[in-house]
Image 1 (spheres, one colour):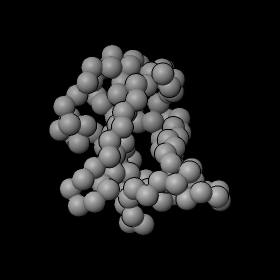
Image 2: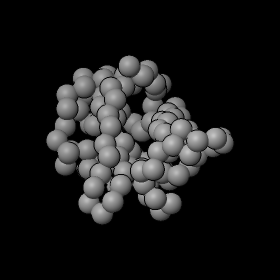
Image 3: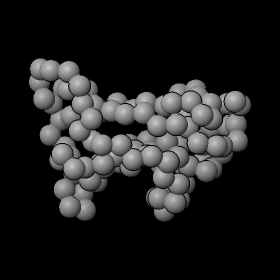
Image 4: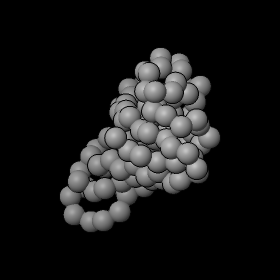
Length: 107
């Protein structure tokens, strides 16, 4: 589980693969449900905390294995466990979604 604090920069990484195009954006959502209770998808949608370019990649070599990612500032939340979700559109109305549990501590 990732441990972080309000105001920290939290960074995510994903492989380039062949998913997403040059204009795709990765939507970052952070639940408001403390203690890691899973929100509904609409609950996530109402708590977007960042948007990162999908093709923010570095390195060379295999295009599929090129590391991509970005960082965002952890927003104000009470101390406790939360669910972080990131997703992007692969094709029209076809989304890739992943989640992680995070622990937010006091400043």
